[in-house]
Length: 207
Image (cartoon, rainbow, N blue to C red; front, side, top):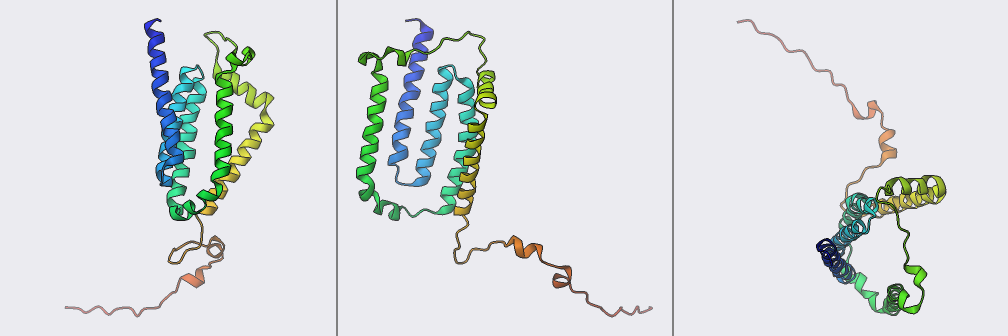
């Protein structure tokens, strides 16, 4: 094994291990804020693995958009909602069997992909080879904005609805919280807020 290949494999296993540990901490952390921070670490390590696989554009987009924008917004929403962890734990036992079934299904799917060659499905593991000068950004842009434009726009609308829903969740009515009412603000007139007072002019005394 050449030194470059050995170094690449070492980096892959290091970031892969950190990715698995951070993903486990996302679902086992007791506090939602800690889970969101571990999700940031999980996304960052995923971006590194994508860059090592040759998908540098997807890795940079994952860092800039998901880590830099979406996940930061999610972290702020979780902190503003002030989620009561005790109430979340009350329904853990009730939904534990369904979560176990979904977890077993995910593990089975991952094992099926990893051992696809051993099962005889060699076609699943063959990736198309591209030239060294292949531009991933141009290829992805052509696919998104020419062949899959409508699904791409639909995904954008779904993300917009999710963003609006996250904002509405933070606008819960609580006692003692001051909030603005834009409909009342636009109806305000000057005569209701400004009062003109006539003051007597002062006399000047000569020395």
